[in-house]
Length: 111
Length: 111
DNA sequence: CTTCAGGTACGACTTGAATCGTACCTCAAG
DNA sequence: CTTGAGGTACGATTCAAGTCGTACCTGAAG
Image (cartoon, rainbow over all chains, first blue to last red):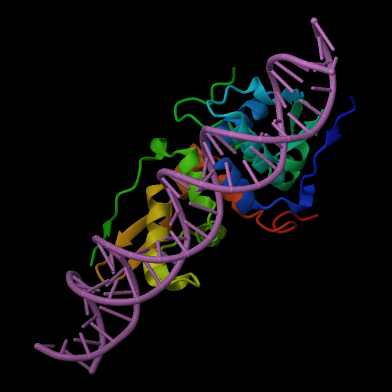
């Protein structure tokens, strides 16, 4: 059950336009915000995010995030895992993940 | 000749989704990158950016940037000025403008 | 006054993205 | 084996966004 890692771009190949386009969508941004808030960067299941959209659309969104280089997707066959590429993002675009915490105007309430 | 300032959102009202959507476009991002690179934040003419698009489309892009709260537009009647809202952006989304400098892999980052 | 460059308004076109329906695949548990 | 949940593939639909053509406005310079 090793689960193979689906292909994404190298850290140096991350494109700012692609990243911004990926983060422009509410659903994808909510996923990224949740991932960024968890400092342990543990792997999460794809449906552990409460997305109010069909599973086909979820597949689409996770793929966009992966192709933007923001997450890794681990394929176990009949289920899938997701992990934030924190190190690569911090290396290429330092400060981006912190920005996601500033979502609400009033408080960057650290929970 | 005073030139009146066109309306944009308050600093606290800046929305991350709107901002990311604004910065997802290549042309708008190139404008913002140029503005962010100039630390004097001086006012610039609208056609001082070498955008390879028609003037109607430029009008559209500058409006999107203004409505996202990223720039001020000063209307002089028969011409227009643009100024970066650096203070408001830094207050609401610190690090965002720095991010624009990391456009090319190896750009701002001295390695 | 007229001319002209800079800019806007409105509409039309086109492309891309988000969404979902249907069908199919994969694997673990019966 | 069969079943069922999680996920993918493909296509269709819908909608937002980027683009430009035409027409019009504004102010400075002739």
